[in-house]
Length: 112
Length: 112
Image 1 (cartoon, rainbow over the protein chains, first blue to last red):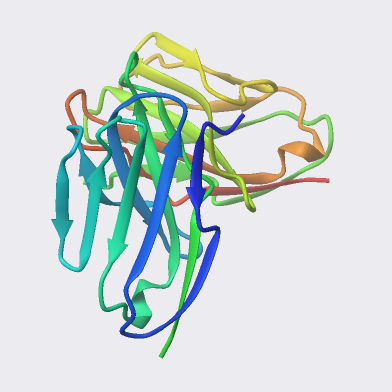
Image 2: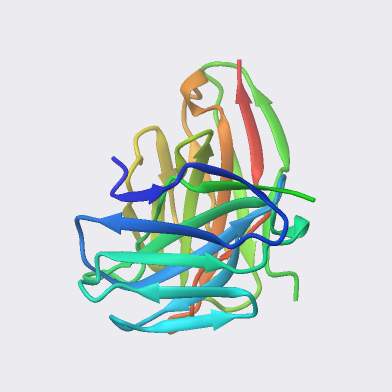
């Protein structure tokens, strides 16, 4: 079954607002990744986190690797309409670097 | 450099039919994976491979077979299709020490 719990499931916000979403797990991961998926496309990597406590930015996006290695969050500042899509967290298993597990996703809608 | 190429893009099968979903990458990536995506479920790992000749099961392997005879190709076989296998299937690859998986654009499969 699903081992990553991602929240919230969906968000409907006004353009210009900040957004925060998070992911928790009962398992420890070596790497946390955040992806975005546009309709009809495959997920695209936004940010990769490799160390506990690491804070990384990519433009208006900021993500952190939790100290316990069991959680991560993603913030989007000053949202714009093109931020619309589904955001996924994903964890790379600590004991096997090939196995990447995904959260259920957060659907973001932005009202202009 | 085409990235990860999946064929076909769309497929309709009758219950009990078999078929192979093709996946090829031209980036010389060691790791490859197959996921299925269903509404509200995120992406669930079916099978993955850490190199030619090596495959392993993911979260939902039942009803699917894989093989990895070359680095480039990682086909997914449905031996006897069932309506529960109606889904969007994504193939992904990453290098040995890469940042994350690169995804194909998906195959939308309907089993009637």
